[in-house]
Length: 140
Ligand SMILES: [Zn+2]
Image (cartoon, rainbow, N blue to C red; front, top):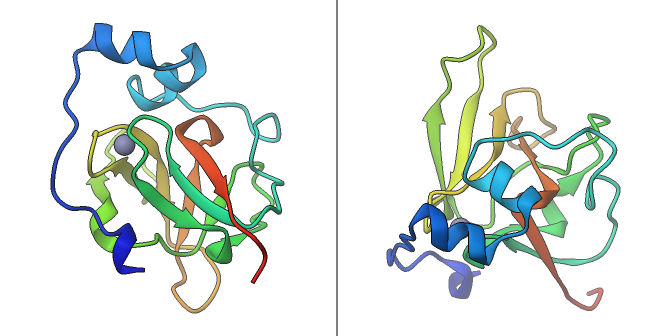
């Protein structure tokens, strides 16, 4: 998985440039910390094999191998492809314990991390489909 590791080169665009590049749903989630509706998004029930990339900058974030059905209505993963590719921010907006998950390359909001995921990590990376784009791969 070395080829998927973040090389440290950031993507830094203005709000106008992001608006031009993204769809309105992508912009709302990635740049405005929006949350799309549960069960009404592209990937919550997606069973394709592949690599989920950041919809903002293309950085590879998750593999379908770590995707599981959390029952929440959002695509959920128990680990990222590489720890460097995501950045966690403590979220003080709610009293529940969770961290905001952002893309390390473009700073785009992806979703949240909770501590109620499955083994072996016990983590639940609860993502917005609008923040992701799958690159399908053949089943191995
Ligand atoms: Zn990104």
